[in-house]
Image (cartoon, rainbow over all chains, first blue to last red; front, side, top):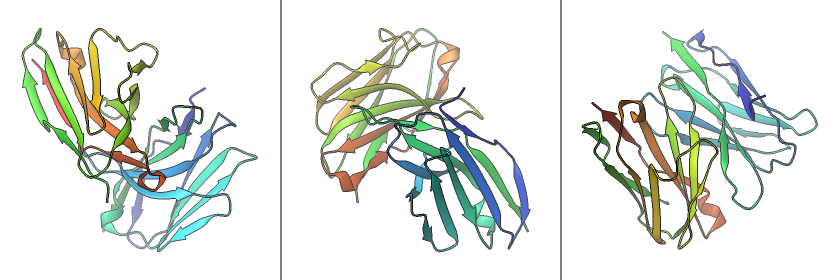
Length: 111
Length: 116
């Protein structure tokens, strides 16, 4: 089983749509959780951290369910510029604090 | 904010040669540097973790004699791909973590290596 699993997509949605991405992680000792965005041939950029209480940043809402080891990202009112790959990322814990990346979910917002 | 400068951004080399990739933290001290590799349509795979002044810790399956990592100072880490082969062609990205928690993980802009 992969440490971080995501549906690779692609998700093809029209502008203005609401889209949700899900992610599961295998290590119950994981401490920190993030969503990153990666554009084609570019480095990943932090979109938002994910907290147990849930958190929102404009059109983006992230949720964490520690009991189910499940993370979600909701994007409302999709824009063309949201087209990218969304990476679910988990801090593996331990002394190294290394980040474990999911394979990413490709989002294509259509005009 | 925290910035990591990674060079070169793109390199083409002949099979059998070595390539050095540099990552510099410009405005913070990078106590830990992570090196990732990403093949097309795949996720970032951690290759190794290095702490300043210590030997790097390599992930399973990554050849430490082929991928030489040096982290001699708090602002510079290098990855040298030795005796490169076409299968080493990939996108290599560094990520630095500093002494201040607020900086989190800062990524370099990546190096696209093509071995011909």
